[in-house]
Picture 1 (cartoon, rainbow, N blue to C red):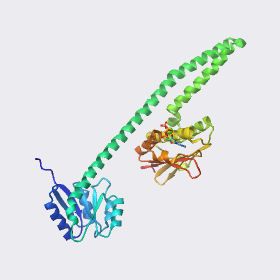
Picture 2: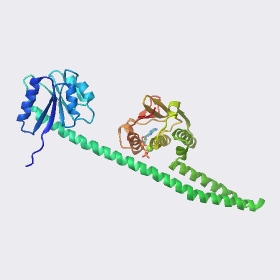
Picture 3: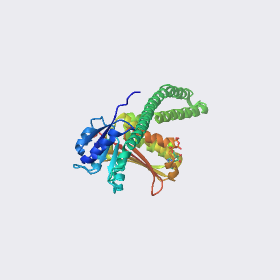
Picture 4: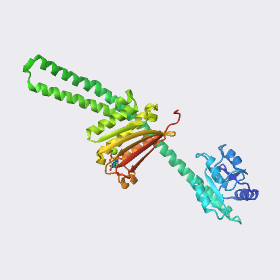
Length: 356
Ligand SMILES: Nc1ncnc2c1ncn2[C@@H]1O[C@H](COP(=O)(O)OP(=O)(O)OP(=O)(O)O)[C@@H](O)[C@H]1O
Ligand SMILES: [Mg+2]
């Protein structure tokens, strides 16, 4: 049978006696092979943990140079899982530690009975960690896939828009021009059907233009996100008899966002506006954008019937999930809530690293 390498357990504990007891426990453990690394202070413990050889950490609460909570705060989220060792009367401490990222805890009793549970508890924690890692990896992969598909779709839309513009747009313009010439040649005696045909051709041209801009609003490329948002909000409002307002604060307007972010923000607001038109029965809609610290905030508020709690809880609505995924891909967050004054509020927060 192949020997498994020992599990590297780091104990961060200033009490020599406790450390020694641990050492003895692991040396005698039947459950697995453990190798114990020891640190007698928080700093020392962090230094060892950051070297990357540690499988898990046993953390005493009261260290000479920092508290267990401070230790947890300094440990990177990708660091090894931590089991808190607490005194018998410190359920609160354990709960707080778990909230701050400890994976588990064990209560140290005076006569050292906790030591017997230690190996099993560690193995359980590591098993959970592996499951969690797997789940997170799978989620990250899915997210990457979704983003990739999104960018393919975006390219595809651009290509189709281009093709419709070049082929169909050209044809219709040609037809309309011929009709115009025919009317002109007939002088005052043109068949009234020709005039109607000309109107139809003009409608068709307008429709093509709308389809193209829905597929890929060229204002987004030409004028940038903010003008595109103002333009699109107004278009949607006009088409569906809504009052609309778009308030872009100067601190947001001056931001230079890359193409990926601009498209994402545009698509999310677009999707949000579509929802307002389709579901809200609103009479007005408002888009706001401003900067708050290191974030860009965009809100979309309507005064309609409001989104139901059930819809919000029940995660399976693809429009909203799609918006959320798009935003998360850029490290942002999207929240949708029922407004106190009635209606629905969509709030998007996007971190702005690297922006002055
Ligand atoms: N502004 C809004 N006001 C009221 N209800 C809303 C609003 N936005 C969304 N909803 C509710 O949330 C549900 C989910 O929205 P979501 O965009 O995910 O799906 P959808 O619009 O029904 O379908 P699609 O996948 O085509 O977007 C909607 O069906 C609607 O009931
Ligand atoms: Mg929708």
